Image (tube, rainbow, N blue to C red; front, side, top):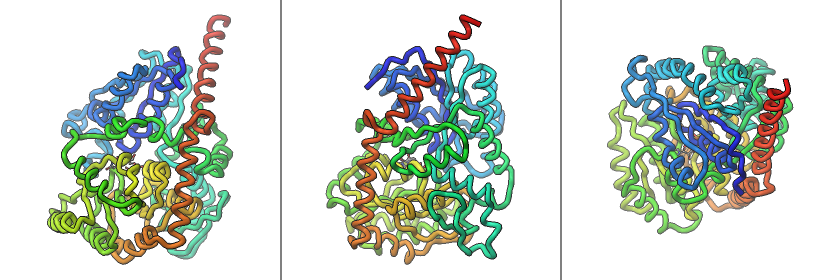
Length: 494
Ligand code: UDP
């Protein structure tokens, strides 16, 4: 279903973090799949995260390419190669990465003009791009890395401030003016909302830039969160399109799935997980992963390890050693033990998540509720144990547990800044209980599984001809075409 839209030229600019790059690049690839001429602007090191996918698409004859920029690492005092907000960037490096980005801004702006873009799609973290687009008289479309529910819930807490109307941090309140009665506590609301800081100001600027944008794109689909899809557009008064699940749509071949987010050469290790998984019965394996940014302290890794071993279920655990704490010996012993018993498989660092989730042996996830992972689990029809950490994870947990009813909460009580855990450790008992209700085979477990499978069918429909996301991309491209034509007409007949 590839359309000829070659006269429409777009520039996509992902933010410099793996989990914002992955879905926006998938979206860029969808536009190219529909014939729009696409250039992705990013820095050279970040391009390595997705270049394989672009090469595959280009070989398929799709009009897509990457334009790499040199990140000014030495100018901002960073070692070469540190140019993304990910797990390897220390806290002191973050402001420097922002500085590097600010240095690149004029170059990006002039590329919008040089490359003759008809529209730009930029990450939410580039609010300046709405003015850059306005100068050129072209639309800016903003990419949101979150769910419609999360954005609606954030709007609700910022607007109504319900967390100020309770007497304690643990007292529950309902998030006002949302389609469902969703309850949270003060400590589960992002700290930057409760105690304004520089990030609060950035988020205010982002919201303001969204109102002036042509519209926004989400990696979501109507059937997944229809009430919030409608609610969000109503409260924001802006246009928005759900194009998800982008991972399912853009990565239809095994080669695409394997290339996604791959930052290191393929290794024997990967074949190992597949061989191991293929020996396991259907729905028997738990996939445990906390996304691309998390690095737990050793005390937490120990609790997870014991909980998994004690659960009696098979598991694949994607794990990162906490080198700063000098840890690792527990994990090494643990790995030897569970390999021997055949119960568990550890993947160090990065796992080919899409390939793993679609394997029939996987029966559920333990997840931090990163939005991409939630959507990918829904694709795969899998229920989840929810373990929110930071960002908008606690809002996503509400969608999974209370609205869709395909998740069991591990019971996290407090939103924390990225990789700041304080003394909070989720105990092996709490983890074990949540795993038991997810994988225990009881009636509630079967109901959750049935609901998750139903959503997976909806996800597959959404991206097919006539499906909601499919219609959305066609409608949007059509709108952008008409806009270009009317501009050209105005130019010819001023
Ligand atoms: N991912 C992966 N392998 C990993 C870790 C993450 O493929 O080992 C991918 C995952 O499939 C998802 C993204 O990285 O697309 C993580 O995004 P998410 O929003 O779930 O979490 P975040 O990384 O923002 O915490």
